[in-house]
Image (cartoon, rainbow, N blue to C red; front, side):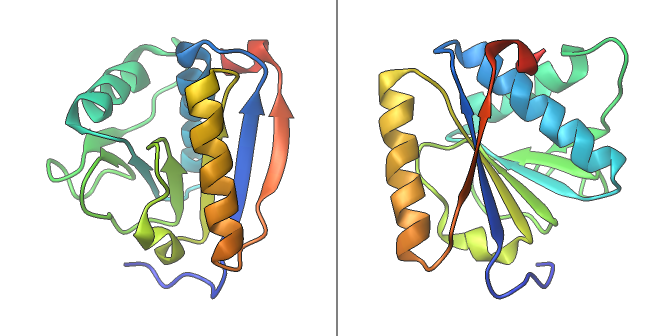
Length: 149
């Protein structure tokens, strides 16, 4: 793993829509931004199906960009990797799973996403409280529905 600071920066992006696609598109934009800043990224999903769906979306979400990526375990040299199990060495963790991963402290920065869907919002509140219990002070950023794509 990349040596991370004692306390990683955690940013919560709060969308005002309940459309899961808007949340995923916002995650793609953040992944692209990190890639363009020459940062390595690990996108953590709930399961292999969600990881594969995000892998597909990263190929198609914008016709003006290209983000080299791969599923974790397929191409260890890709600057962006997507998975659901073991942590992958990277600078940025894009957290899309329902539960915050215990390995969060291995990253310099964590980007977490919450939208207006009641279940995902409750899961996000639990993650936010869990990070605070770990001694991290998450920042929140409100994002409009049209920011995702």
